[in-house]
Amino acid sequence: MARSGSKNVTRMPARRSQSGSSSAPTGPVAVEDLNPFHIAQNQFDTAAQYLKLKPWLREILIRPKRQLIVSIPTRMDDGGYKVFEGYRVQHSIARGPAKGGIRFHPTVTLDEVKALACWMTWKCATVGIPFGGAKGGVVCNPKEMSLGELERMTRRYTSEISFIIGPERDIPAPDVYTDAQTMAWIMDTYSMNAGATALGVVTGKPLSVGGSLGRHEATARGCSYIIREACKEMRINLRGATVAVQGYGNAGSIAARLLHAMGARIIAVSDSRGGILNTNAGIVPERAEERKRKRGTVVGLPETEKISNADLLTLPCDILIPAALENQITVQNAHAIRARIVAEAANGPTTPAADRVLFKNGIKVLPDILANAGGVTVSYFEWVQGLQSFFWTEDEVNKKLESIMIRAYAEVQKRAREFNVDMRTAAYILAVGRVAETTLTRGIYP
Ligand code: NAD
Image (cartoon, rainbow, N blue to C red; front, top):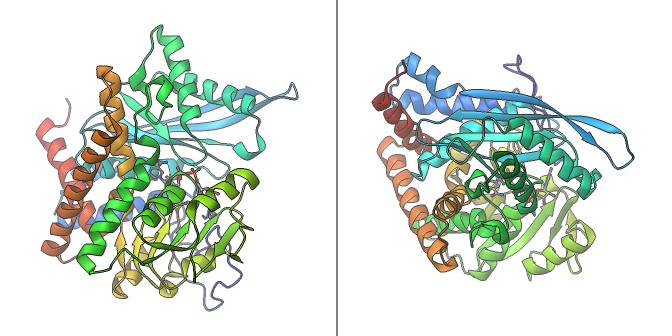
């Protein structure tokens, strides 16, 4: 992923994706703006044009409602203090409380968080759940921090943003390098200050503190349902279909496991340290997960050969799942993508210029705001269960998730046909149309 804080750059030389291929094309340098917020604006503008929205309404809809930057002084294990920078952006509360994950990563920037917050608004609207959009991030490297340091940093960050979050205001969840434990600390910190346990303040919590069955797998499960619908439409038999997965965390590893259980052959997977390939027999996802758990990377799994993250993206396969970070498929490598379907488990992995190349080449992109919406959908279920203190079975959760994902796929597909556009534009037309309608019906205060 390219650094994304270059606010004033409107056109800049495209940089190599973070996967850093040595085989990147060496021809003339393409120009492409990789700032995620500019990309989010660009995607919004395309839909706004189809919907013929008035300029003033466009401005209201795209601008984040609230942006908070906080300093997080944290006691480190050596007795010293380090001050981390954190963000919480609420893009929209038009359709309900703001909702979105928290990311701990060294390259987090305010513009990245703004983009991720916008995408949450459109994602919730695409699947029709009553939330707005938000996102949070802390610039840090969790891989170099102890559990104690992470806990102290998380608790102070929670305290700093506590006056804008809450069960009816803004509900965080896990994202890159945050997990159920992080959510438990956030819930506890918020609750200690409120003087009462607030189950609804975060989702993605451990089961022992009010989490929902099925939440851990929800992003990947939702993605697998969307892939299954696309395969039906394209007459691709999932049994035996070949799959490559970039990023082997919550979204990627579970997507590999679920698709493998549906009969697909996982030919390649990767994480931040590189990728592995076995085109003949395929990779058993559970073995790769075990390797990552024990050694910190999938690389080195027996009976696989090593490949780079960049080479994984251009493998011939039926389904490519980017499940890591933004800006992985850019104008530089889009022409080399040989998958039939690109299912975006990650947020923002494909740039608008790359989208156009993929569309022209007949590759079906299942956009992030549809393909990874399973996570926020089950977060919604978790929030509802927490508010009612009445918990559902895993089967109930999965069945409700499946029906929402199937409905959303059909609604996006309908717009793709109606407007003769790709699935991303269709999803944006659906989502932006819904948020615009709510905004106009509520009226502009005062
Ligand atoms: P995670 O922290 O569980 O996993 C991230 C994975 O990506 C790790 O395996 C890491 O090694 C790998 N990675 C990091 N940098 C990489 C690189 N440059 N190349 C290849 N792999 C790299 O995070 P996650 O929750 O699985 O999130 C992954 C993506 O999915 C993000 O874009 C996130 O916003 C999106 N997402 C997650 C959820 C969720 O519920 N967790 C929901 C919707 C979308």
